[in-house]
Length: 463
Ligand code: LLP
Image (cartoon, rainbow, N blue to C red; front, side):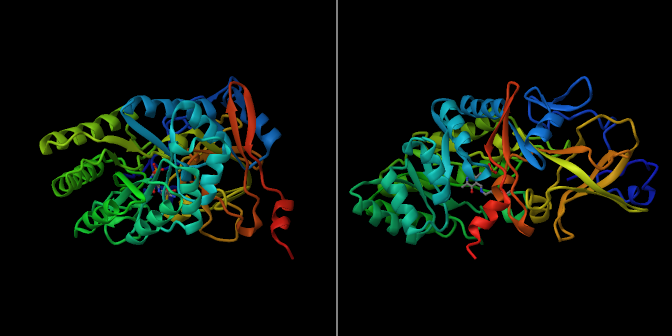
């Protein structure tokens, strides 16, 4: 990611010349709409509002830290993905990004399907009324109990991830007297340009079955030979937070190649391909994500072209965006606590949350933006590191950013684009209480996941 030095400000001249951060925006009060949920704006008093409600009111009613999720933005993004791919394709929201019963209901109402990867996610989906046939079940180590439940519930597809699982699912399906619809997840050998922990299509890792050495073709042979399985397609997920479409195109091409080999060997044209999720979003002004219609066109063009060349019927495409739907729709609201200027370095701004509500900075070196949201300010920009309250120096929420130099304890600051993989990866480290998720829409705010309480902690600790 390109980083540029910025002309020295008044307080941190030494570090400013090192240039490990973007230049501050010309006006720190202006919100870059790329990184904020769609209904976020500033009101006449300069306070940030979402869904028509000012953050001061939200903080008073729901406390901080808290995630505020713009429901109409979430729904609009679901619709944009569904419309972009059209009736001949399927969009599965990846529940791992963030799942709750309210989210399941929104997905159901907006016509999306759901990808789950654990018994807990499956329970949430079924409990909130997602029809089982619209659920895909993933995972590299599904337990027998999880497979039993998924098959018993009648999920629309199970994505097989290993040779052992092919046999396991087949046996369980037979015991249930059904033919389970399945896809086989393959690793296509693409090096996705993203953090190594979230890249999943290179061969040396735990997911999927490799295409390269004929393993995937062998997996197809075995799946086709088992009565309990109805093999409907091939699945590939190359990684996460990816901007470059080239990796998806290579992946699509290699999956179509496998479909061709399957047709040639078995005389069967598998009717589906799933190209996974992984589309990047803007965390800072420097990120330029693609729109769903561009992604849909790029993927469907390549699949259609490759299939025509191979004289193969074009399969039904599905995708599994998680981050691209929920990520931009939420921000985390924090109250500023201790402010510690380190002369010649930067100013440490401590907030009332931290790595327990956003582990992504510590885990992936992720970049975020931040803004003062309870008021505007004309003060000079100061270089800050936003840190949490945990007993760990890696407890960083925003590595390098600018906030106004008159920032004071009690101010509210917000970190945008925290809808994906923040609440879902939140922890109780230091016995922190996981923050609530509050859905805001048309002037109304309601808790969809409540804040944890100390009673919750004690209830699990059975003495
Ligand atoms: N489909 C499959 C099979 C996946 O494994 C994933 C994500 C997705 C879809 C959704 O990917 P998305 O569109 O959300 O990028 N915790 C990491 C991301 C891990 C993603 C795991 N799999 C992070 O915070 O960046």
